[in-house]
Length: 304
Image (cartoon, rainbow, N blue to C red; front, side, top):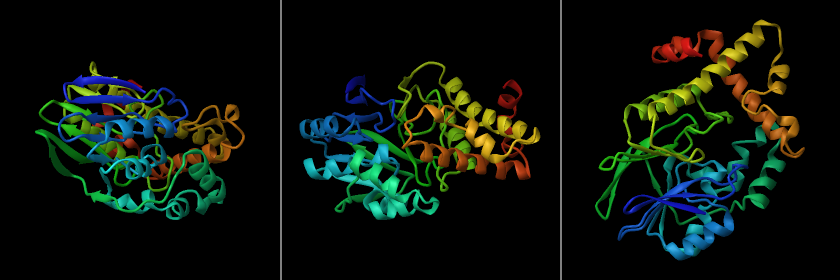
């Protein structure tokens, strides 16, 4: 784990091996009341950290596996109050519900269940609490605004520290691959609205789940995230206009461009996610386009 002090009392936590997206970066408040957010550095390292740090409060930003499976370790190894998004609590607390409402409807339930339980150690939990963003907290004089930023998931939350102008974005797509929206409950439109909202906050330091710390050219980073979405729409539109089928476009890649290089066991899931992302773009293109829906994107669209 790499631990970076952002300001006295607030640290950023990064896993050492995050390339496979089975872990995520998070943060902690080291004041009298100890708080952790999305602290999943892999099972062994997370367990060790929690045992040593002993948080009083733990937040999960949304239900996706890399951000939620560590909740079981919080309840097992600390006495912290585990707070999960109210609208996603069933995804986080029940493996059966999680599988049934993600991959099962596409015939990949057994494979996805095995990955969640055997590889990422998903365990059913109880005894947690919920939060319903937007809401605010104050811990030892440090204020946190839990911002509802849906799109990546229905109840995804980001966390803003207004007194310090620090923003923990969660999974908003500020890494080099851009935003991901590969489950059916994701929404491109909601995600764009959330990104535009977070961009307007003018935070001085942005902490991301998978893209590190951003302290310079923050507006450009948000613009780059939006540009990824626009490039996907443009690419899909051009390929459809050239006569390519959905299957051909998905095979070439919407988000995952090198599926052939992935482990054979992962390819069905990568193909599923690309297929869902294609469907979301195709549904928008049936009506208008993203720049038509969001005039604020017009300048980015012209500069692609």
